[in-house]
Image (cartoon, rainbow, N blue to C red; front, side, top):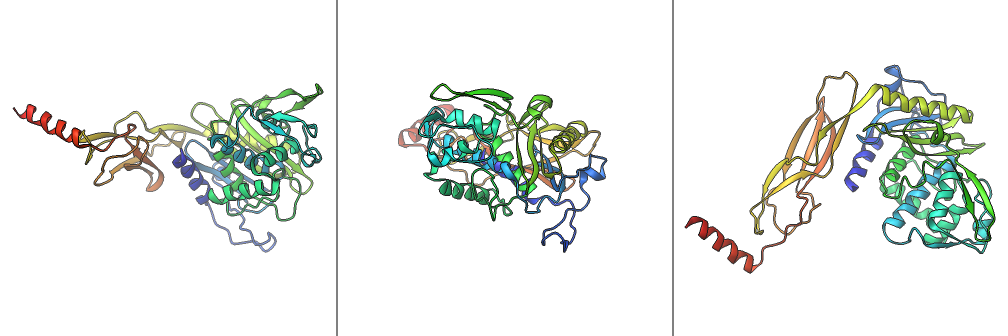
Length: 398
């Protein structure tokens, strides 16, 4: 799974479809040239920045000012959720754990779930309110639970951004409320959203449109999802809105139809309708113009490797996962695969340990590199195994 993250993130971070020298009016940031999408008849955007990719293949489809550092408002909460999901996966917190609400969390401005100070709420309830209502009070309550303070939690957010290669991002808070020094880019937002989607906890609430949050004292707050694609876009899997006067209207979304999974990001749309219109058009472009083809199946034996120090002399090797290559409909160029097995494979090793690679290229361009794995644990042969092996071979020879 970590290699899946690396593949998608490498495609996002490394993609550059065209280079244009820095513009003196753009604060030194590079400005994207003509995008693949615009060159091939895809919808243009009016937002300050945009980025479009397909998550299953990692292929970048379109970019517009994708590396310009901009405020992103509540899209910061994508990283907040990613850190929360990681804490759940690592066992630091539990999904049904109760979260105390401090006066600090209770007093947050902007979008809120209107949590009661001094009360406790389940982790899952606060996650749901962050996803659906962009609740700043829930973000701070979760930050204090996980890291002790929002400041320490933000350090985790920045550490994760650094780990994923998000070199143009800096977080100052867990909410996205305006703050000096806070910025990100359309490419970096797509990077963290793609990472977050891989979590086992993603998808629990991302498609919830409306719900009632019942507070410990019985008070009820009705919450409605700020991402209208949840209600109206076919195949939507989730997304995160954002708005401040400084950032404008922002949105990151993903949808799935078949094996095609676009991720679209816009920053600085002039109004709310535009951000939904443009992300919807971008995702529909991918669904209409592209298809994903299975190139490598994890069920196929790709090589048989000799093993030293194990009872069995050989082991079958498989790709760590399926790989789908995103291609334009009608495209005739097929990808090629090259399998390389590590030399001198010795026991012991685990079912998911890398024992080689399968590389995929198309048109001379590297598309993917997957680990070869045995899918079984292979133990080192002990003395009794050695005796049994010798006896077994003697019987066969006799």
